Image (cartoon, rainbow, N blue to C red; front, side):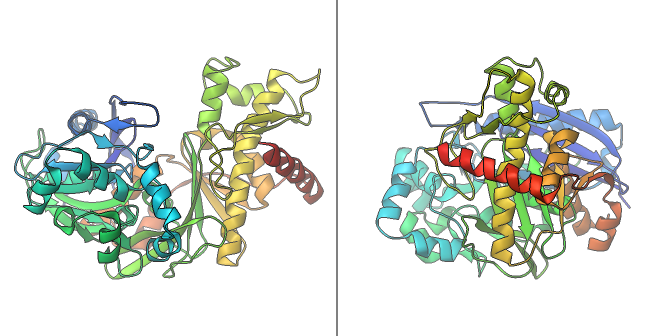
Amino acid sequence: MSKYVMAIDQGTTGTTVLILDHSLAVLGRHTVEFAQIYPQPGWVEHEPAAIWESVVAAVGGAVAHAGIATDQIAGIGITNQRETAVIWDRETGDSIHNAIVWQCRRTAGVCQTLTQDGHGDFIRERTGLVIDAYFAGTKAAWLLDNVPGARQRAAKGELAFGTIDSFLVWKLTSGQSHVTDVSNACRTMLMNLHTRQWDDELLKLLQVPKSVLPEIRTCSEVYGTTIGFPGLPDGIPVAGMAGDQQSALFGQACFGLGEAKCTYGTGAFLLMNTGDQAVPSQNGLLTTVGWQIGDEVTYALEGSAFIAGAAVQWLRDGLELIESAPEVEALAKQVDDTGGVYFVPALTGLGTPHWRPDARGLITGLTRGTTKAHIARATLEGIAFQNYDILDAMSQDLNRPLTQLKVDGGAAANDLLMQFQADLLGVELVRPTMLETTALGAAFLAGLAVGVWADLSAVKDAWQENARFQRTMSEGEVACALTGWRTAVEKS
C-alpha cells in the first residue's frame, strides 16, 4: 500500500507542502511565497494564477526534498486561507478577477447595510457568524457585480465560485471536481450551519446564485484524483480538506468535547471542540463547523485576536528594539516582570470578545525605569492576556472550565510566552513536536480517507508531545495582573 501523505497548506502569504509518513516523519517540505496586491487602502487581493504556481512549485520542491517515488503518495490533503474568494471560468479554469482576500474590507459598506436592515440575528442563527466583510459571501457578490458580464455568465452556468480549497481541487483534478468541504463552506455566510447545505434565503439576501456554488462535502473523502499535475502521476486521490484553523484543531487531535487549541501566528486563533452541538455564543464568539467525517459532525467555538506574532514584528520593524523575532524572548527574560507596564496589542482594533475595530494599541505604566526589556515582556504578556479573554468567553458559552490548551504556530516556540499563558489560564498548556499542525490536520484527514490511519485513535496515537507548561503564579498574582490588563483595555 502507498504509505506517504502530501499536505498542501495554502496560506495568505505562501504555500507550504509537506510529505509525511505514518509516524509523522517529515520527508519533504517546501514553501513558496507569492505577492500581496493592495489596489487601494483596505483592499487586499491575490492573483489566483500565482497561488496555483506556488502550489506547483511547492509540490515539486517537497517531492525533490523527500526523494520518494511519487506513486507511493497515498493521498493529498488541502488546508487553506479560509474566506478568500475566487470566481473562475469553468471552461478555461482562468479566474475572472483577482481573488479577494479574507483581510479585504471592500464589502464593509454592504455588511453595514445588512446590519442596519436588521439581518444580524437571522444571519447569526443560520450561520453562526456575525455580519462582516471578513466572510466570503459578500466577496462573491462583489465579483459578480463588478466584473463586466459576470452575472450574465453565471446565469448561463459558465462560472464557478469557491474558496481556495475549491479552486485547488478544481485545478488538481483538471476541472473534474467542483467541491468544497463543510469547514470552508461555513465561512461564506451562505451555508446553513444546521443543515450544512447552501441556504436559499441566505443566497437571495446576499445575491449569490446557486449556479456558481460548489458541492458541499465532508472533510475526509475522495473528491477526485490528480489529472495532468506537473510532476505527479495521474490517479492520486485528493482526499482531505479543512479550513486552516479547523485543520489545526484536528491536527492537534482535539477530538473530545471541551478540548481546545490556540494557533499563535500573525494573529492568535482559538478553537474549542463543542461536540455534536452548534453552541450559540453569548460572548462574541463565532460558531463554526470543526469537521465532518462520514455522518459525524463536530462543531467548534472560535475566537481570534488580530495581533499576536505581528506585535513582535512591530517591535522589530516599527520600534527596531530587536533585529529578529526570536530575539524577543531573550530580551524579555532580562527582567523578572514588566515593572507595571501593559501593552494592549490593538494595532488593528480588538477582536474577540471585544469586537472594537476602533480600539488602538496602547502601552501604559511607563516610568523612568522602563527599559526595552520591560516593553518586550509586556508585548508577550499582552498576547497572552488577549487569549485569556477569548478562552474565558469560550468557557462561559460552553458552561464548563477549560482543562487543557494545546498550542501551535511559530510563537508557540517561545517558552516565556507559553509559561505566562499557562499562569494566566491556570490550566496545562501542551505543545506538540510538530508546530505545523495546520498542515498536519490536512494530512490526517486525507490519510484517514485512504487508510494510512485506520481511525481517530490511530491519529491520536501518532500525535506527539514536545513540552508541557503549568501554572507557577499564585491566584492573587494572576488576579492582580488581570485587573491591570482590564484597566489598560478600557483605555485603548
